[in-house]
Image (cartoon, helix red, strand yellow):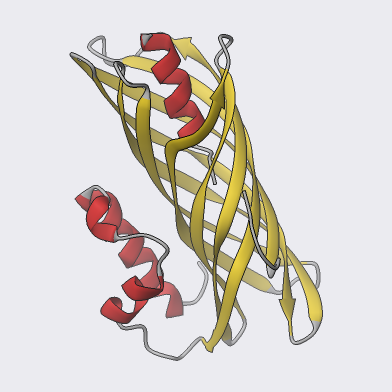
Length: 224
């Protein structure tokens, strides 16, 4: 039972399937480390790793392709008795367009156990939702949608003997179902931004929700 929940948490860390018109499509590949803490039937997890995100975004009638490299961090909670769980993640990346122009992406993901499949060999797949900003030149593109992910992991000796630790890798397919563009110089009001997110940030861990808002509100800065 404990192993099954671990697999569920792995699945949640890459979950995010799509409905409606595709306004953005992308693919993410990541690898990282998950640290697990157990307290009776409750499991908490922390994720950190590297994320490569590529995609195609329609801009002024043209398909603009990009590739970025960056990092992803997250947290998860689960219950070994019910095999239920939820995960929250933030990510940031920088790269170039096919034309060579700089591009930056930043955003967040959530996934829960409402739609997942797991197997006994620590592999699985799941779905969830995402919100991201893509910064291109003078413009800022906000995209919300869904993604489907697949993951695999294996246990390694933990850095902290009171925990369990895994190395994991996975892929995510993104599809945007809403897209809005702004001038990069347009101010971002925190309350207005939160209304455009596909989830209530009050349901996120405080540290991660603050980190996500810092990433998004600071998106008018030039890519590093």
